[in-house]
Length: 223
Image: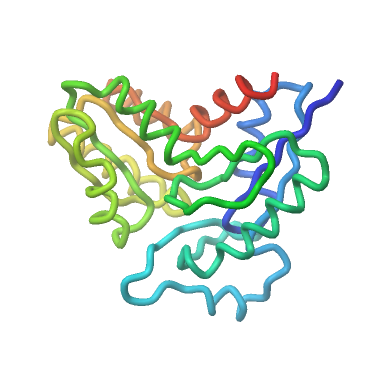
């Protein structure tokens, strides 16, 4: 019997850059029901969700492949509506396709928040090691330092978007390598397996990829 899980992006679905790699881990017996907080919105409506001073910044992908910066607080009702939709369609669990921090959502099914899963997984293996974190946007660096403080023996954060030129990612990884990082975290669901492998090839340093950790947690719960 095919099981169903929900996948909620803070951008627009389908996330052709994310979900196929998650499906590869989940296998053919699990159907993924996608929905996006920004589905059906015009460019003008999306622009109105842009972060202002003091807003918690999220970076996501639109259906056309472009990226946008949005304020978390402004999309929470949209995310709740998409969660309700996939659960009504039969999802047994819901995975948020974002490593940002979110308040609780109302849901009778399990909700998997990649940031919590990623943080605990990393903390379990980073003891005594220098942790290098890459986030998509320079506006997220300070908040990221606070969120990852205390994980590992020391911490450095660099910004490079998975939705921009890949050379920026390699350069960020090189700076963290020069800082003597011993473990990398790619702190955005947009980073993919190819990026993870290339960083490891270039540096020889282990790399933690959020989508892979989240997908393997999900399969544990529904298989």
